[in-house]
Image 1: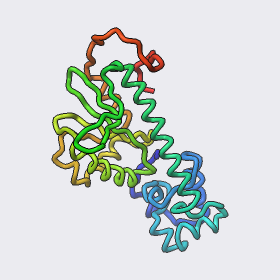
Image 2: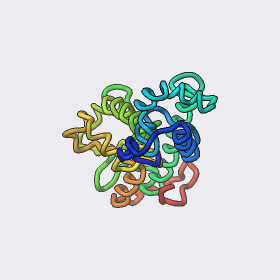
Image 3: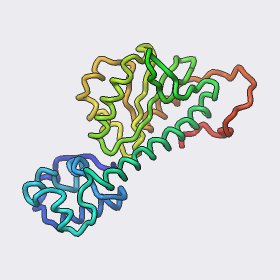
Image 4: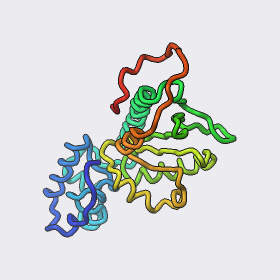
Length: 234
């Protein structure tokens, strides 16, 4: 998302139906759809979902009174469309990141879907560098609160990941600032005391990797993939 809750909007004047309609339309213009209840709470130009519940009878009722056809984002087609969009974005982000990693570090040093631990768990990428190997898991989330849910699941999954290997959990949503990610991660107990796991935005990942050295390719081999002409971030 392209905003961060400041707290000022909650007491800034009277929240009329038309004022909220303007906020909804602004959000839809910026994001391609209406906001969910969690996104409303994080949006500086909209009231809280709690206020909407008390004053207008809830989000579904308010959307109906405003004439929107989609009124319930918690189930049905709307829920499925949002989930499908998030999955599609995550897969695209993974493909784009793989191209960057191969161009930056060389194909033989980028292992995709690398198995770890005693079970069947896999990490999206393991990259080998003179500065030490590191793992990357990249994903998209609907919003920052949804990101917390994903992270709790992933932190349990990576409990057997080698502790001496850095692990980047990469939130691929373009509108998520690192400061917001840090703020939401501050309450995750599984992250506290873990120096090897970092939750970062794509921008922060590219900045971190720009300083990581690469091995000179020791092999003369023909890649099975399309050549990657550039190591610049997409």
